[in-house]
Picture 1 (cartoon, rainbow, N blue to C red):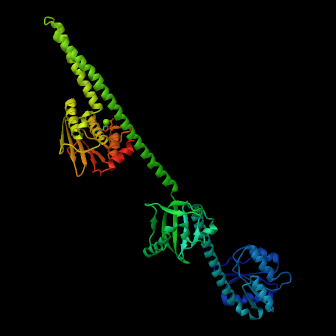
Picture 2: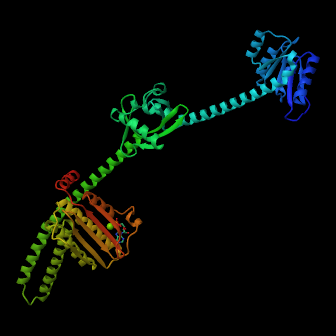
Picture 3: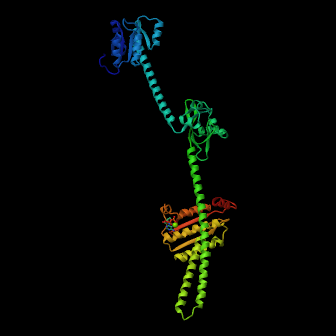
Length: 503
Ligand SMILES: Nc1ncnc2c1ncn2[C@@H]1O[C@H](COP(=O)(O)OP(=O)(O)O)[C@@H](O)[C@H]1O
Ligand SMILES: [Mg+2]
């Protein structure tokens, strides 16, 4: 083993059986390179043992030894996994033998007659070995990073495609295979245009130019639905991000493609179930109004008729009573008063159930509503309007009436108000705005979203049925304001909508 020497000292493992030659080598190296550590071996065993220790810079080996050879040394070196340069040293060796040894991995050849060149050759071999080591390390690092990157791309739940300037796919990941339904071998080398429906193919070259000109990413399919074409001819809704990339093989386009069919389906289902819910609500509202109308009629016509009959009979009877029977006259008077009260109640109930006043138009009905509200609650309320009437189909008029009714009920129940501003204003065509503002306690966002409350929700449903907008918030002077805005309905649309929703 060589003695401990400074790191920069050259460490040479010398395979040589001739002690004089070994001394010559040492002298030449020390002469030209300064101090060096030289360890001489002449058998395979010693060579292998020396190799297993570390720290050698170079092997210098005689070609033929009595029990060992440079060729065997080369094999032993390779088997040990050390990539030390081995310089051959020989008295005489034929060209063919030298070439065979170089081919087997020797770095160079120095004739014993020309030992002076050995240090230079060793230095050159060391430099070359260093360059080779660095190159191998760089290649290994590159391969590792490429493996990591490929693994990452492969695992992405997004289809990745790299497309070259000729529009050919040069890279595709596992999700791309799944999405486009092509095996990888057929995806790579395929024209990207074949993954696009025919009517969109002409868009590809402009897209390529756009991303490379602006050096920016383009996102497509986030608004309007974009389709990809699968191998089986099926169309898949996708979202795609296209980015320009510069590679050693020239400019490329990197496409990341997301299959959005599940999301699109879920969106369609939500829309359809919302639509169904709207239809159901509209249907229930109509059924409710019809039922109310029937009950209102029964109460008004049947009960009201009976009570009116009874009232007339009692009045007739009272007239026939002898005036001296004051007790009976008084009793008849109170029965008449009770019957009048009962008649009032039946009228009020039937009006609330099915406001016959609606037959005189929405404005008349709202006016009655304001007066009735004021009378019942003592809260000041008067309709302020710029019109005598506005043209509305019965169902639409009922919807407006019910919105106002719910808003006023809320004022009475929740606001603690003393006045209500109740406005009905018309706009161009048959557009109108209904505004009910109180001066009460006001309303919060949580109030509006209360889970067990359905008043505001039913107002919104009715506003939607009217094709209008309902806003609920703070009134200008404090309190709560409910505003319904309905734009002009072009002829035919409203009845058609009503027909669709109410059938
Ligand atoms: N005019 C108002 N002033 C103050 N609070 C109100 C008013 N209108 C509604 N609210 C609040 O909004 C909530 C929800 O109203 P609504 O949906 O009609 O349900 P409900 O009247 O059955 O409680 C009410 O409980 C109340 O707290
Ligand atoms: Mg309510």
